[in-house]
Length: 181
Image (cartoon, rainbow, N blue to C red; front, side):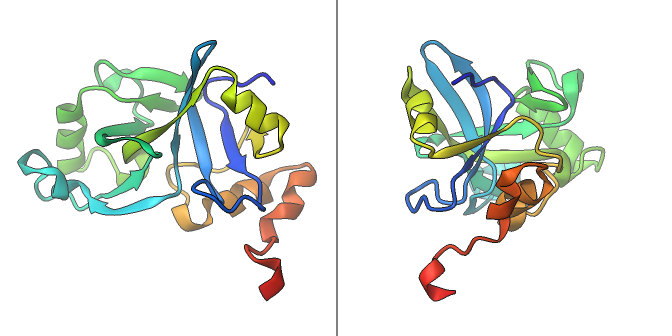
């Protein structure tokens, strides 16, 4: 399977583990492995919970994945206006000078829908993600057709599926537990 930086992975609807109904943005993919962030799993934290540097910023923090839960990351749509940022693809960028983005948030130049903060990340060793895709654990989405940072996290998985012009669209309304339907 060819996976590229900037692609979106959606967990298949029958997956009932940590990644159930997850939407993941792949930020790195090399022969050594892959790295990405779960876009739709809110934590119980807001930024100001992380110390004085984040004071008065009641912006939700998401769980990027099970790895590195002691790290803070962010994805944004601000391009190279933030120094030391890494272009992922399209309008999406990863990381940069956090003090700059915090200042821009405080003065209102940057909106909450332009950035998403994460504790931890999702990582796969060499070949692991390709094997999971082969086992049909993931749907690969090259064009989500929705704003992945502005769409409500609770409905992001469903909204991306609904926006697709292929058979994946049928899974958008699939119940989490079909026995309760």
